[in-house]
Length: 160
Length: 121
Image (cartoon, rainbow over all chains, first blue to last red; front, top):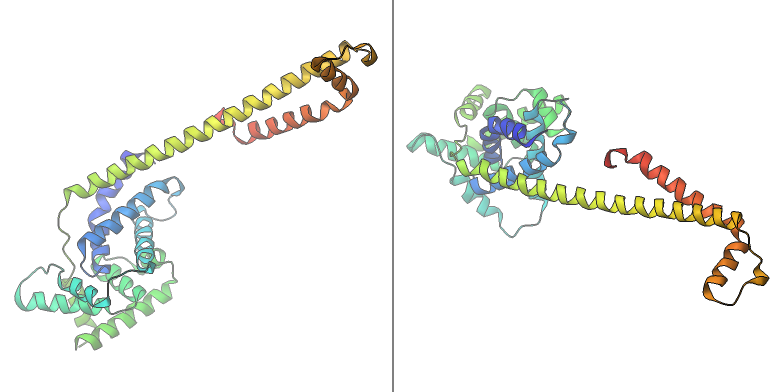
């Protein structure tokens, strides 16, 4: 794949990719952008092996999710409480009550297991189908449905 | 709270990504850096392969010439004067039947390399 073609495809996907990682990173925009860039460089290096079995965006999201998982596997100095602080920094679309509700939701999302959180983010923020989520997270479709259901139940119990 | 409520809260809470024009520029810079590294690695690999092929071809030619000379112009070892070159000639004369082995080795290695990496030649 030529660099120009790759950049054209990335230009279409970048907003969605950054938003996905922003939600996964609990609102830390600079971290989300760092992971997104890392993912895009990895995707570019591996672009020769992309043979079109899945959509380019699905392939890209899968790499991005793996980069995010790799990042979180590395030992870090930050404490868990700093992640909660990051969750508060997500810009809400509205002020007042609505903004507060969003911040509570993002904090609740932060407390969910990784795959539940990723399934919810992909399904509700990025409008991805079960099949696409299954391909991105590399899990069976039935498991995605389970994660979505469990994630909704967890969110319900946290937000009530 | 019902499932529908949670779903509508989630759908209404999509995070907003701030526009960052530098993002794609940084990606392009990193891609150029990756391209540079890939080109350098390819160049060194090609250089190493060329050097290896030249060494094998040289070995093949020198071996073939030495063997031909040894068979075309046989010498009597007892009639040779004492010097380094004469010693070498004596060794070649004594073991000329085994010269075929390194030559065959060079030829086989060359054949394998050329067969596997046609694109680089």
